[in-house]
Length: 399
Ligand SMILES: *Cc1c(COP(=O)(O)O)cnc(C)c1O
Image 1 (tube, rainbow, N blue to C red):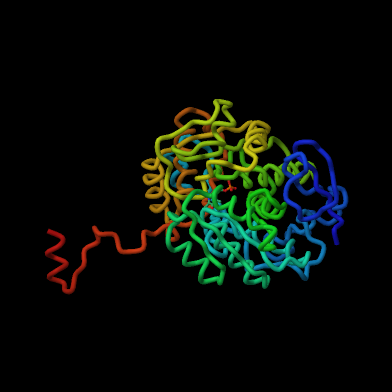
Image 2 (cartoon, rainbow, N blue to C red; image 1 turned 45 degrees about the horizontal axis):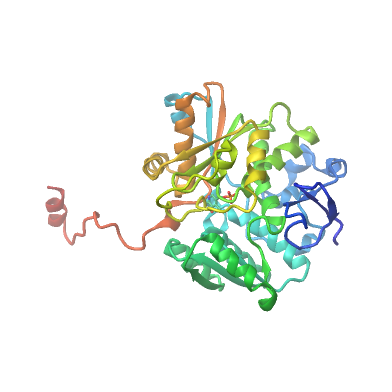
């Protein structure tokens, strides 16, 4: 079963796959594949015939026993072209990857489908995750599906619907008076005594591998070409690592040609450790933190790795404000797409990069709408919506 190898991104040591978190040196462990072996069956013709699911890319996912796959219908989300905006913006083509259509309403489903598959294959019965919300609800759902006992630890200011979702899926749910790393400290502190496995960001290889499938899908949906630019809302950065792996593997397999896409990692003003690491400025200290979203990760587990990948991809980072995010959500809404603050942030980032000229008229651009707006609802009707009982009331409130 454990025939996979893991390679440390820091000391380059390889070791046999075991669910053990980090390398002894503190580096992040990523799965190594036999690309030549995969190439025999991971072909365009074969892939075309397979069922539309992220598991169609199984040769490059860390599973050996397909019976253990923990699936709720994740992946193969639509890639929508936004033609009308293409005429208004100084870019070539514009696409949005509709990740909000995944089970549990965010792309976190992909990572947890892969992670829970790994845990199930290895007989783990109890696991825990520190999360800003979407990881917790995805973990809760996939744990339920896998029959694994789930514990989630979430900052108390998390949108209430996401917390409700965790309860709905039967996770033991705890609000933490603190931030995601404080939740992470609780999970680590209880690891031995509680016997739970920590499925936190970069603690096991499944979540990166699951997110990697977004890159495979984009290439396949663009008829085996790569976009020029991808814009990604970044928190811990496991998606950046996953996308880089996807494009590297496709290039190595010769399934696509040309340049690696340039990635733009977007963060929100108030919490920008990945932007800071990329720009080598030292950590910016802000007076206030932004709202709790997947981008609010003040202490990402391996910011240097994420920054180095952004450099390898000829990428950049962008910081956007809450006002820009709000305006962007309205813009995607007008196109019929429900964007969470993170998804909207990619739109805001795109506008900035068009302005600076980093995105050019020839560029094919893909935005990641990682979750939808509904999960972030305040929990009651907005106060400016009129309440009426009759047609006369309607006429009155319109005055
Ligand atoms: C987790 C999350 C992110 C950040 O993703 P990372 O790969 O961890 O950087 C972005 N958007 C949403 C909706 C998220 O839940």
